[in-house]
Amino acid sequence: MVNVLILEDDPIIALDIKSIVDDLVGFNGFIASDMPSALKIAHKHTLHILLADIHIKGLVDGIDTARTLQHLYHSQLIFVTSYSDEPTLARASELSVAGYILKPFREEELVASLKLCALKLGVDHVLLDIGYGYTYDTKRQQLFLHDTHIILSPKEQQLFLLLLNSRGSVVPLSYIDDVIWYDDSISDTARRQLLHRLRTKLPELSFEIVKYSGYKMNL
Image (cartoon, rainbow, N blue to C red; front, top):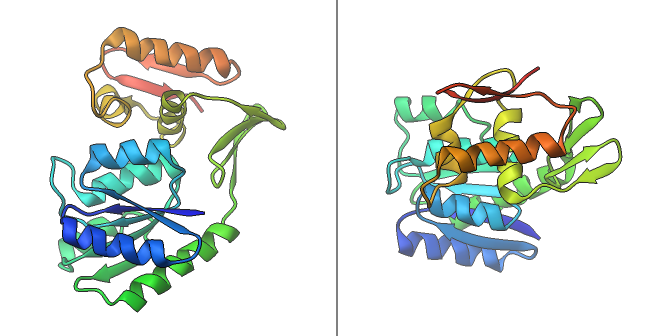
């Protein structure tokens, strides 16, 4: 089953897109209207394709929400938006974009883009070599040490992916909090405990606390 997250804050358009997605054999649609609800759905379901509007409600727009979701889940991305101005296109081009569909969209154009993304999912089976015997399967979203699957909790996996995708650079505490504890407040102790659990499960990898700044995975 190909899971499609529809990031759209207009409920009529969102339901219209979901009906198109759900009518396709092998596709399953989910609706989110902002970054917190998108993260909540993505944490519960393996995310394959993101259909994202650009101007959505909340403090974080569709481009930055898509950036975060791709950072975590390496999902295929299609923008479905009314905006085609140069500044918006320039920001969107910073991401790995599989399609850019302007509203009002044609159903056949959306269906073709979804099917193309699904075909790419079957081909793009990437194993990231992390080092020290660790690999990360981006399609199955699983971590392995040699051939052994390392079980991480959802929050452990989210922190691991944030640090992995910024390896060698500090990931700010504010960004970690926004992504992992998007719907709750968090104490410094709880955040440190999460990093401690990650260190315990992955002792060969080097994780660093940068005081008053953030965390990083060393090269």
